[in-house]
Length: 395
Image (cartoon, rainbow, N blue to C red):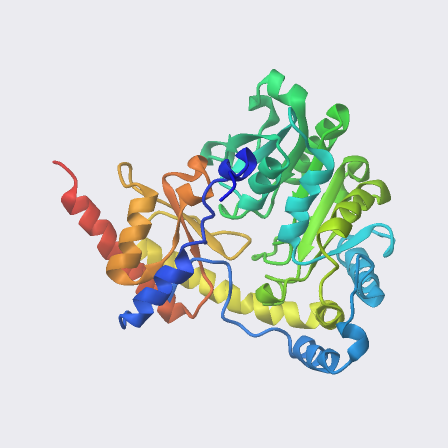
């Protein structure tokens, strides 16, 4: 086999890559598996979306190449939603980019703006697409460790000056995966200002903008002065509408920035299936009626998860957003060893913090994506595994 590239060899392991095979083996052995790993809820999409997809499947016109343009009414629905939700107007044809899920757009964006010698500031722990796109662009990742002492915010004052001088891209994601942290408005305004001063592209991953609780309403980065000069924002139908496997999202930003992403994509894909974009219109148009009920289910699961894991001996905060708990482990309990033992011994799947980068060590992530009773059972088993770690620790 020909030698692989340094770019490929430099990619870290992907945190979810090995789990499906291990889960299959557990199920084959008759293990009662509780999967709280991926952010992939067991809930149904909006019926309007599934019915629209069924209609689209019978329409030959929607089964042809969509190319970069895609299904224009989908672009228009996105534009209307962005204005209704954030009071931000985007031209549907030039300032919106339909995506095959936000992940591919985030990764491909780096191909347009990064090259050898450039730096991207990547939060760690964080979504691995940020580092992946950077490394595949032959650029350098500066991993910024998100820690409780800074409320899991990236503080640019902590970044060395020589790194800042080479930084061309900053990835931010609030509400945050995996920590569930949220960012104050004054913090976001300051980041926009600093990116403008240094001509840094601010890549704002807003996939969890609609997964918020207790009266909190996440903003768009474009609500802050000057953001259109330096930012691009990514959204997805995955979490909001229980459509993870449908792979349907978008990017929004200035014509200049969006055109660069569109140009890259014209060489690597021919657009998402237009039938899914057609269904995406139905999903977006149901936002105001669908979201409250769906969020109520997640709120119930969040509260059940917090209570159950606390009762099982873990420390965790009540998240105001996302579908995750970011749970700390006692000192001396490695997150990967804990997650492996929990899966192998008890059939419970969680993600170790180290899977999101070295900055995530000391934590594990729980996705509250299933019924409260199952979450409670998972927490009970996790508590048993934690007790075994304590029992085996040297006196």
